[in-house]
Image 1: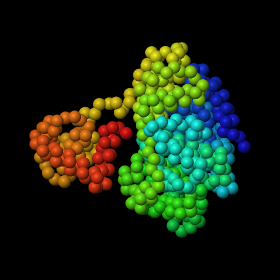
Image 2: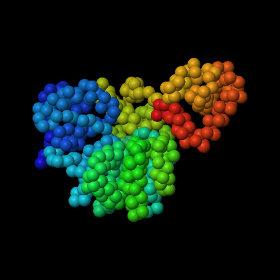
Image 3: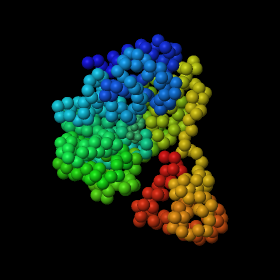
Image 4: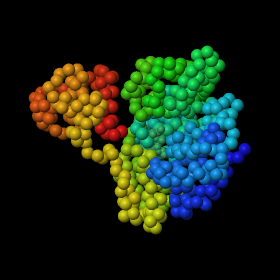
Length: 453
Ligand code: ADP
Ligand code: MG
């Protein structure tokens, strides 16, 4: 059997023949081969989203051609980012039938991304509780902190923490049967196994696979299918594991009560354990993350530069790391030093932090109209039917929340309504949010749209 590394080396030789040295060094040589998926697709890890764009735009054809030339049996190349690695690493042996997700005989086949360890995880105010609980779960699975529900925005380190726990088990608790799946993978697996109603074995396999574990991690549970059967199956998987004292770790981009259509009994289960949130890192922590990254990569960047980068990205650690990578690759490209702040500023020129965009009245109205499928004229008009009153009240509520406009001015905008009407609408939604999950969800959805989260 040839390893994927050997395969990639052959392909690199082919690419090198056709490409000039600069793009080769900058982009191609930074790719990391992960596996040959199902013997047909070469899976390559790209270090940043920016690189991914460039490679897909400019170099994908050359890579594909070289691959075909070196290995005609491989007919596709797929590019992935860090957070997808875990899904593929188990297929790391190149030219061999891919092993199944979990297999009793071969417990090694659940692999965790090696870089996502506790050592590489910077702890600060925004994540200290989540990281402390994760450590406790790593050291003592199935004890106090069960289930563990980690939630927080995109790119804030949820997957990293789960892998850190997994890597810890791999090193210190080899006999533990651990599975890490995305909610999507779990759903697909389930649908596959339950497709044929008469195929009892397939169902049994599925249940054996997920219910005989010591630790089950489901990442991004918000993407779980809304079908009753999926939720039912999770519920039972969950109960079996929980009652047997096995560890369950769930991640999501929001707390259980905000996951729309999550069955009540599942929500209650998730809430019965430990809820640990990860918030956005403050400036100090963002700098610490960049410093840690420089130390790992062995580069010497001065703090002024790190400060510039950290000030630019506030809400996503993935982007933060991506920008540092961009600076590191950009400076040598133009023959300058990456400690030169001018160079850094021009490397960062294109990056704008969406969250810093000003929120305007127009923006709020636009998102409301898109979300509810109503027109602005109706929103500010006189109609009082249900379909329009609700969006109007939510709009008023959000305007009062996001903007510091006087109530009379808001009233004027909303078709010359009195300020007491505006107050009424605002207070109505504000109390409905607390009592009505559907309204709460609607408001949250529109808010997310406005904030482009
Ligand atoms: P999420 O799953 O929450 O979307 P990830 O776990 O994929 O986010 O993290 C995105 C990137 O940011 C990863 O490269 C991860 O290593 C990094 N990261 C996030 N939080 C931290 C942290 N506290 N310290 C170091 N790296 C972090
Ligand atoms: Mg993730």
